[in-house]
Length: 134
Length: 119
Image 1 (tube, rainbow over the protein chains, first blue to last red):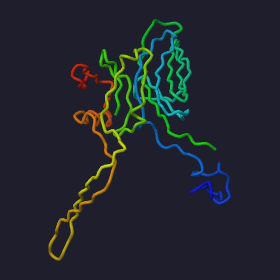
Image 2 (image 1 turned 120 degrees about the horizontal axis):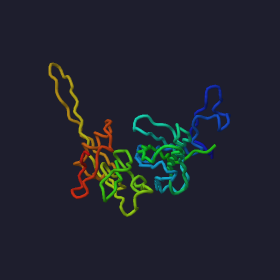
Image 3 (image 1 turned 90 degrees about the vertical axis):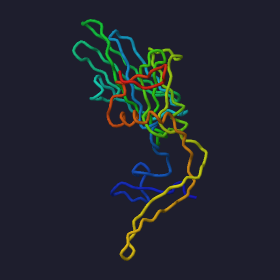
C-alpha cells in the first residue's frame, strides 16, 4: 500500500518520480494545519533597566511548534522577532522561543546613557499546528 | 476571542483572536512575568466547539419564475453538525469592533460587573 494519497509537484518536476522535497504538497508528511486561534496579541510594559521580562504562552501541544512573533512600540508598525539592535543609546534584545509546553517572548531593554523609562511593547504571535518535516 | 486580564486592575494584557475556539485554544494560557499567576483571569467571547452532535435546520429561500408568476420557494435542509456553546453573546459587538480595527488595549474589564469599558 502506498504511503501517500495525494502529491502536487513544482513546475518542471515529474509528480510520479520527483523527490519529496520537490513537492509543494505531499500527504506522506504532516502539514501545518492552521494556528492556535487566529493569532495571539498582547502588550507588556518593559523598563530600560536591563531586566528581561517574559510573556509565557502555555500552548499544551506536547510538541515544539513552529512559531512566529512580531513586536511594535506603537501598535502599528510591527517588526519580526527576534530583534537585536542599538537605537541611539537604547540596547534592544527581543526574542521568541518555544519548547513542547510553552512559547516564550522575552523583552530586554537597556538604556546606556539616558534616564530610566518604561516602554510599552505590543506583540503578536502565531503558533502553528503540526510542523511538517522533510 | 479569549481575553487575558489582571483580576486586580482589569487591565487587558493579552488575547487570542478568533470567533470559534476548540479545546486546544481553550487550554492555552498566557502568563506575564510582572503579574502573579493568581491575578490572571480570562474571559471568552465567541463560540466553544464541542463533540456533541445536534440536528440543525438550514432554511434558504429562492425565487422562481413560473409562467407569469414569481414565487418564493423555501428550502429546509436538516443536517447534523457540532453543537457550539455561546459565551458572552452580549459582548459580541465588542468582538466585532476589535476585528474591525479598534484597539483592544483602549478597553479594560470592569472586574465587579464583568463588563468591558473603554478607558
